[in-house]
Length: 260
Length: 341
Image (tube, rainbow over all chains, first blue to last red):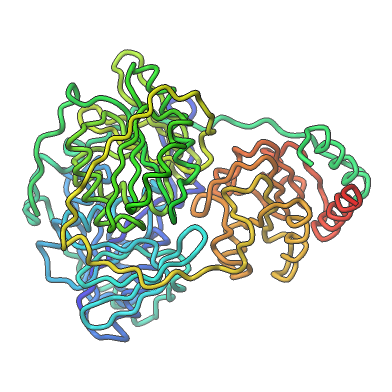
């Protein structure tokens, strides 16, 4: 089974701050990681390969330093990795990103299954996985928490708001996975050695035959026109005293507000 | 992979569509919340608001309530294959509807259904899509939709526009906007019959697995009691459940406890869980990382109980108690029980 996993290198979000004077993101010195949900997708691909055989290919669209994320995937056990990188892709929104990734997948190989994390923790859109499925005109099953493959079909359990839903979907398809699906492995020493020596193939806009009128900022329907820090909230009232005093005080406050 | 056409030219696109999500024939509250917000936007655009209701043949009788929250029209999209949500038939039906009626704005709830649908629909109809908006406004000069949303885990806010593509599509989480009833003016139901194709029916739903630990729906609850790492042990969720029970509320959880396997993910509040905005949110032993705060800071009253006086949760709390949850929470439960006795 040929599995393609799309990953994204993201800043460790809690560390991202905004410069209040320039209203721009402070990116210097911010550590980067593989988007955690994408790590789950890589892990799931490796497990499916171990169970059913096949090959795991990882692709990422990003700047040259995203090779680090790809190397980590090799260390985990991925067979082949591609960096999709070109100035023509800069400023892509989810629409243009999903086009570029779909175009890449179509160009590089045949596939049975495409896995993505349910969303990236920087943008939090959850739009790229379904976008890829749409561009490739194949089915999608989002929020997967359990995946079983039976020849030409996958049986996928989805984590929804109040319930889980079990869906059956023919291959090839796109699945996006949630964190609860697995615990990503720690790379082995052997894997890390392999990653160190690995040569990472880079694909340009021309390599994937992208229509450059619909890539990058130019091809993106949306524009970010303003970024700003969220308004700070005022400190509330601290209720002190013994547990009994504090609790009594709280209960009368809540009664005054007619909440209880 | 077909190449895309030119952007849909703005001048021909008018009006606001709201996707009226239904589950098992019940219209979800997020639809009413979005209609209420759409009504305000429509005033700035001098246009109408239409609800789009997809479902099986019997869904028609649900349409009436949509007028009570600001719909001027309801597009009724009834088809046996639209009874329960599935990506492909819904995408097919809504693409046809959008291309025929050309709304300039299309709002969709950021539920698992809405996010699954909108992401696919936006590519097919060739428009921009902004996820999880927390603020919507009409630019007074350009008359376009300004969509504000948190990014980077809530550390920054971004305002996004779709200058040239129509519709301007956005998803909004449940409980971000308040629903408010209006006196309905028109009540026009427009029936739209989509052509669902064989290729749209490739995914089958085999089973729905209920989570017995969900006793009260988190997003509908007026009171939520949430437990975090500070409760110390998974078995201490009992004290959280007891307080929730006496208050008739739902049980919430922080990501840390869900990740640790203390409680099922259906209870998780926050950036990767649910956004809630109850009348009362009681955070017990939750430190209050920004990812949690973005999911609950819209609550009317927030009570924080934490041993650490510097915990960030106190910065958003209406009332704070510094103390051990294992003492404070049972004391609170007792006190309320006495009151009710």
